[in-house]
Image (cartoon, rainbow, N blue to C red; front, side, top):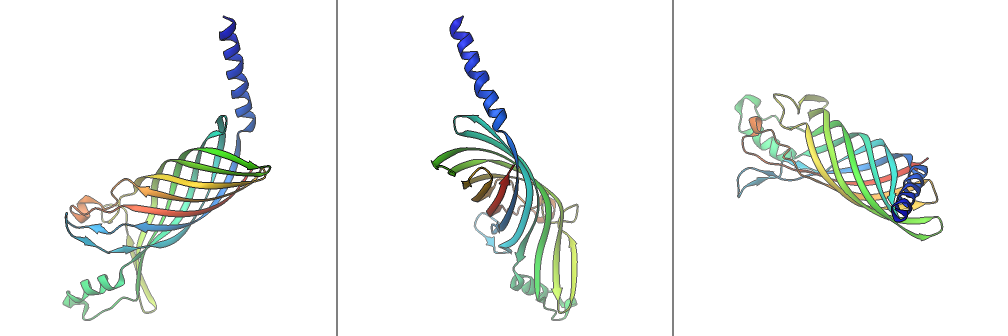
Length: 224
């Protein structure tokens, strides 16, 4: 009985300390979207989409769990882009006589959405006021809006990339992994990657085509 009481006391002390150290933080990140080639068949791929830049902004809730392990869920609003292979689009246009030699000057996919990362990590305290953490975990992605934008000279046209006529699925799950640096009690920076797990090509629009969406992030933040 005494051992049980001692164990409960230790667990209570640890949980109380974790709650005392739990805190909110804000995060801003530069994002490099890295779409994969579009898989047309088992042996054929198309370089349809290329890397594009974006930004994200959000909040996290940092919760110490045990020793230096922590749990950190969050929510982020993001804007990101894919570059579309202009030459491939122009080659497709050339096959349609209705366009009579029309050539585009640029094309991109522009996306807004929400992400919910659920990360776990471990922090190494190297020096007073300096720590390094490693973290990993899943991230749930919901696309709110996406447009495929094409430019011809001074003119532009857009169409929805989501929905019944869109080429992409709205939802994705990625797996995050990265390294963070903690300066003092408040400043945070990280370099991380996210590997797409779900297929982003809509089956009813693209047949059996397959595509994944990956990402590289550089993040800065402030913990309150």
